[in-house]
Length: 371
Image 1 (cartoon, rainbow, N blue to C red):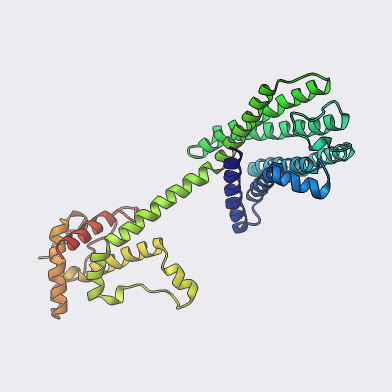
Image 2 (image 1 turned 60 degrees about the vertical axis):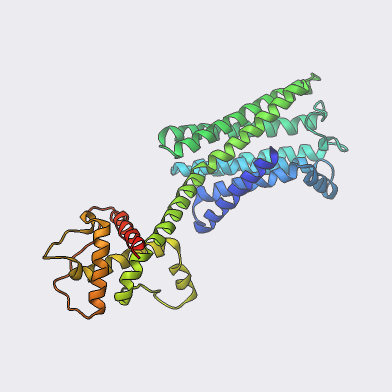
């Protein structure tokens, strides 16, 4: 399960870092990117291979210290994200105060970790000697700050969720629930640390259940902060696939019109590599083909309209118009003069730019069937 969590956080971190590169001065984007990056780095450190490497280089117990410092940084940047998102004048001042608090916590746990003798701090959480004052301070101070930070972030997430609409509210509720679960797990662990410091015993099964709660809450948190983005990406991918399919379905109509009016074909502004690359984008090709079909239908309309009938394409049967278009192209190739003025056979009647696209596709499919 930890591997899946790491993959989710890594994917979210990479995406947020990309968004940060697109908007380097956006404080909320920067904060959430740094929060996910810090959280993502903390997991490899906690794994056996990463912990062994750091302990070998820096001494036993240093992997535990580095992991907790990264988690503190992640939670601080998460709080900054909410502070900056609120867009209040005191956000920067509050962020600086929170930076002082997390810096003090980092100093305290670092001093406590360095004061632990031998290899005691490097032991797993369930077997480490909590009766040792330095270890008790290390886990208590770090745990209390984490409980405060995730609890505050969870409260802000729930607050924004109540003010938002779907799909953003769904992601925020998932985030708030995950943060709430993490806060509860941190609070329970703080109680366990106190019990073990007083030479009490916490059952192994209870410790295991709290660990499961922490992992599940972390997964829910990671899924929540990526939910809106993932849903937007899925919607964008569906639109990309639909427009790619419609672009192909418009090919028969486009080819018929471009054959007689080649000047209507839109070409890149320049011959530069960048313009040519953008010219091949699916959305650009889709809109370009629609414009080219509309222009071609305007040019060919004098040969299609019969007896002054200006019935638009939206009301004309596709197979009937397809046959009239083929007759019109034969007339143009035979240099027959236009029998009347041009009219708009295809144009959206409302503000929807793609309103006439289904009719254009229907005519194109009729042309394909009669080819």
